[in-house]
Length: 227
Image (cartoon, rainbow, N blue to C red; front, side):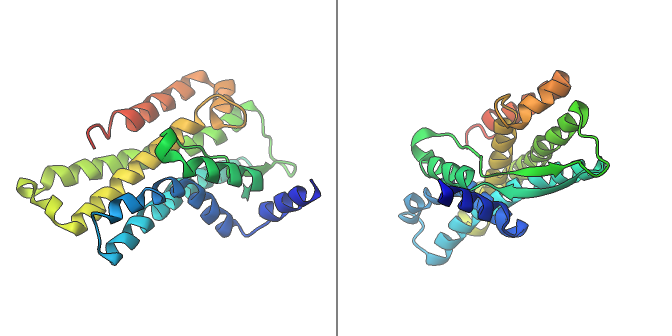
């Protein structure tokens, strides 16, 4: 028990950039473990490396903007804030996401944005709701932009030849995964449960929660249809 507390303390106080990276990896691992199934088709070592790097970069571009949105919104209201990595949360997230290919779903409990309003900030229900909503709203915006770019690539491909170009395949795959990751993280965080953003937003304004939930559902389950 003492060792666990020590690990929690250590993880909570590591450099914020490293905390972001580890948290992103705990999400990206879901797709990294699926890479070997593609290696049998794509035998070029460079392509294999790219297929591993794509989910890592996508994970960073999903988790970091989400947490930074929370952080900056809290700071707008005079509160101090930083991203905090949880050892237990990181371990649970990593282990569950390793089996994404079996379960079909992702979780993210690796960390949270710690907020301190003791020095002039007023963290009431409204401000807490706005701060919580900033994260999923950012993910939804990134997902929309990414899926639009993805479909534009599909639309402009001349006579379907673009898919024969491996470079375009990687670009296409990148934007599709970027959209999917962000949409799912937004949807997951909007679940009104425990420490997730959804419960905080509902306590503030259920209409805002619905306005965020609907696009997150569409982007997660409808927009990438057929791909």
